[in-house]
Image (tube, rainbow, N blue to C red; front, side, top):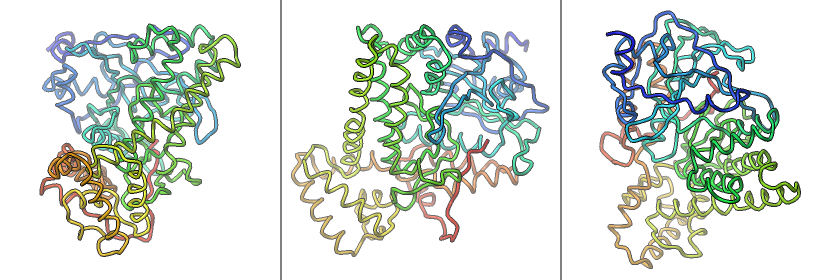
Length: 491
């Protein structure tokens, strides 16, 4: 098969709208070829949704593209420039180990970024090698696909290939490249870069591009830049509420890791909470707990305030008026988040309508869970199937009193008990990517070259609301350990 025919048969249909933005926002360059790439895992269902031919993409021609050794016709690889507040400190950043190949236009006319993660150095590598290790790339594949199955907006993973080369971190590790799919890679940090180092017109061009790409319904608004801010706030309020509802901890909520589209991005030190505790932190570098589970909504609001600051020149010609507009918009975030979260928590308890005391009912349950160190996911699972003996709360006087109040609450709504049960089934996952299961899969892959454990885990995570017998095995808790679980950025 010739190279041109391989591209045609693969189904690549690239456009490069980002490359038509001001040149200050990116650097065009090709990936650095690798020695002997090999396909490790491939997402056939995602490929099909993108209009791609999975058979061709799993051939040597496809592997060469995912490794950065071949550039598909129509692609224009580039590294995006952005800045960001990392743990509260502002710095210049950019794609230090990622390249955007282009935007795939699906048969339905949808647009998705196709990005290689780990294809070599860029001008933004900041002394790094631009490469990635196998473990972190598989980790992102597992978690991002699990998040998608949970119904949480997220970037997704199309493929992981090994490079046949090693990367040096604390030790020598096998190298790999992840192909990431996203609605876009526009970040709060992209706007911070444009506001800090670009002109007002470049900032306006970026904002107009973002409106056209992600918010066409408000693109024609008279105050379209205020509408842009408000829409991003709405999406982040909904997204972070979904994180909280399943016990997901991002771990590194820097402004460069917050997308404008409202997708979860950059699965570095992320993990899922077992025991319910708002102070839970997994990231080895988050010493102060800035990005702890319970603090994620606050950090979301803080990040959005930084986004609002970048838009001030566009919001109003009068600085004072612009600041007031931004503050008013940001002040809506806590309420928007809370409403999303309360709606989700009601659903987890089978509640369809709203009553004023619902918040107390929810908070009392969470307080009990924290007091008795109950597992977050399994507690709601036990409530769903009325297997109260499966939770550590069972038998306590507090739980007995709470349970009676909950049953009274359910009795005050028109919906049937069966309807409440179905709502709870659809809102409480049977399984999450338990940290010990993820580590087990990564160890088998990296240390032993055994990818079957990853494949089984992905399969069982693909339908978390199925509540099948097969999932029971993956809902068990890890063995007690004297050492707290720690995650790392994987750079």
